[in-house]
Length: 281
Ligand code: AMP
Image 1 (cartoon, protein in one colour):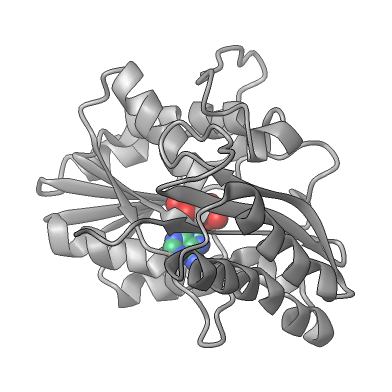
Image 2 (image 1 turned 180 degrees about the horizontal axis):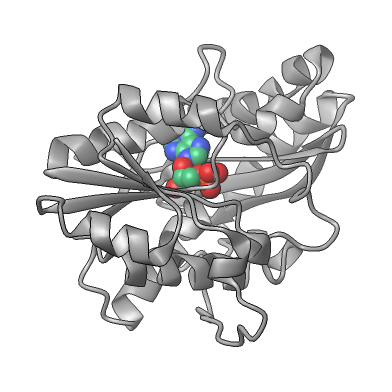
């Protein structure tokens, strides 16, 4: 596995890789969720490139960039274990030199949900992903359904800007008790780790109700909210029952939706989601 830092070293290393080329962008502190993307890329492609970059542009000043967990040695060990060909670890100053002044903005689908509570977040995400795509020029790139809105936003950007890249969205990887894997889970103490189960439990309860015939968007949101409400350490930031593609909030009877939420467990902000779809007849 080759490890590079500079843009020039990346270009040189890319020349030696066989195509099709799969690309997995990450912020590091890797877990099985990230590795599932790399494994899928390995299945589909001849070579796999992973980037590790905690992107300052997608963190607001009051968010957790400085404390964002890092363990590069462990990350590299894990990436070697799943057959990664090339790891790119760019520096902040190389990605955002002092005179940096170009931003990518996807308009509609960035507005609701995460965009409503983290208003510069997606501009940071699309700008960095665009830069990473331009540098790596992959054939396919892999993202997790864990960040459901990000997946929608990236697909929109790729369509709008004609990137010749296939975007593959992979399922959420969960711990055995249901908690969606996340680098941020490492912030949770034992008690909070237990409390964090309310996210997946809320989604499961709503999913069960949906499949038993509950099709009212407001009722579905209420089921999630009441599970979160019962957990003392949890504070619901939002719960949304939205159109899976446009992300517009749904009212009344629904056929399908992206049910998603953000919840503070103590000071740690966690997100989770599930797609509620009618079984095909
Ligand atoms: P991050 O390092 O948090 O930016 O995540 C990098 C990629 O891994 C993103 O496409 C995430 O959606 C994806 N990812 C993170 N957690 C999971 C998970 N539990 N299951 C599947 N994909 C995930």
